Image 1 (cartoon, rainbow, N blue to C red):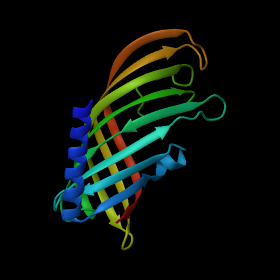
Image 2: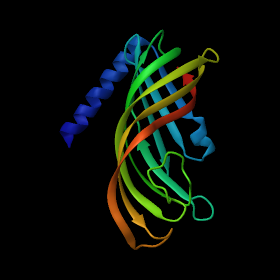
Image 3: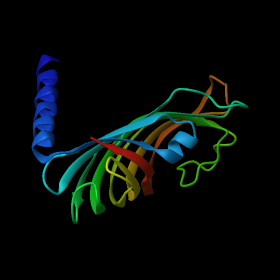
Length: 190
């Protein structure tokens, strides 16, 4: 455990040193997720003249009204290559993702499950993908970013026959190919 902790501290130290050498650190929020009441925050660090590391975090532990829920915790790190200057213009990225979820009563676009309105699903997922995005300069410290990514996810799940039932109906895994990232983020640059 100490060894892993030391490795994480070492990597974080390298990222902080490189970000101080290459100038910029950003804090961001994905506005559509905020509208859906899924709290999120992201950090992006400049690690070279044209490369950044973006690390968004999502966490929603609450139920919505009428027993609807989209509980979620996820991290989705991405390495980005900027065509011009970092934090300005076009970029391409490679992202990974890992998280867990519990959902029922919500019809999600691009979902692995066709019957979310009738059943409760609980499980975890991991995956990877590629993305494209663009950042618009809004002011000296403010940017707006649009990003879309596609890729693969492996989704493990337990299916329950009703929204509150403890009785599990099915346990399995599914493969998903399709959109893995979508964001319209408001960004503050330090």
